[in-house]
Amino acid sequence: MHNTLWIVALAVLGAGILAIELGISPAITEILAGVVVGSVLDFQPGQYLESLASLGILTLMYVAGLEIDLDLMRNRFRESVTIGFSSFALPFTSVTIIARYALHFTSMQSLLIGIALSTTSIAIVFPYLRMQGPLSETSKGILAAAMVADLTSMLMLSILFTEISKNAVILVGLIIVLTLLIPKMGKRIFSHFHGNAVEFEFRIILFIIIGLAIASEEAGVEAALVAFLLGMITSGVVVGHSDLQEKFQAMVFGFLAPIFFFWVGLTVSFSEIASNIGMISILFVLCYSTKFIGTYFPSRNFYPKIALEIGFLFNNRLSLGLVAALYGRESGLLSDKVYASLVGCILMTTFISTALLKRKKHGRWKKKKK
Image (cartoon, rainbow, N blue to C red):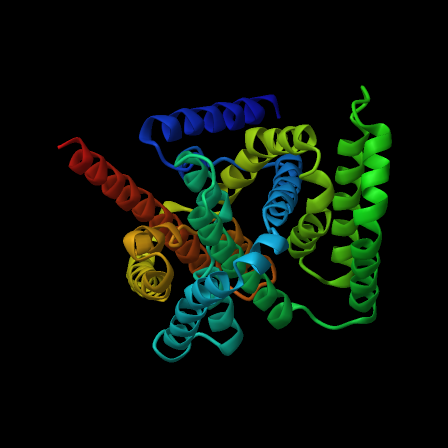
């Protein structure tokens, strides 16, 4: 166990350094580190690593839910819905149809592949916009559109792949109760325990996340979806305590999320990717082009000067796409080869988008300098 811990720690550390030097999302290098370690060293993850990875995806989806600002979406309703829904709908429809009738997957497999390759990563969109400076009205509109795209993909995954059962109905009822109680009670509780040495607010959040995850498993509902909804429900309380949000994000992005992405890489092998390069290429070209078209043309109506940049930015797929792919693998709906193809395609779209955004930004800087 000690040797495996050293390997995980060194791999994650090296992946982080490489990401900083290359100027790309650390999730890409962390997944690739997992692929390399799993393929070259024949690394077998223990139960402890899988448990940490499960906690990583739950907390990562919770943080993603925190970023969903319903007030911002309402205030920027027209552009956010127009751009966000189109950005999801066109690639989802196109990929689903091609997967079903050209690649000959089943209807449910095709729908899941369509969802996985239609997402937009707020975890990349938000930091990118913040790097440009304080959020302007334009940046807020773009962020709201990304939120709509993410929320639509999660709703589709929930509606299409959640079986209605007695336990599922009870879970939905519990979530509704929390939605009504948390905004008021949460603020009182957090204010009362604010600044304590035992980080009580932090413990409450972790307790609720893990508790709902256990309840989700019993109800046959994807726990990551429930964590995402919980993030939305508690965002008004947590975001109001900036120090709490910063501590939580530090734990997630500094420790748990890297382990999750590394573990995802361990579930994929070079041989599976190489043997399906044809499928990966088809899916990549299709999902990237349709996502770009579905984002670029609506963006021209609201932000004509930066529509091209938005088209590249929204082609970043990571957390939500991986959640959909993992669901397919763990439920037995997708084979290991198809799962590996989806992970490979998600990595390619994110890497290409990052490279294109950097090139465009550098070109714009050079033009201004002249």
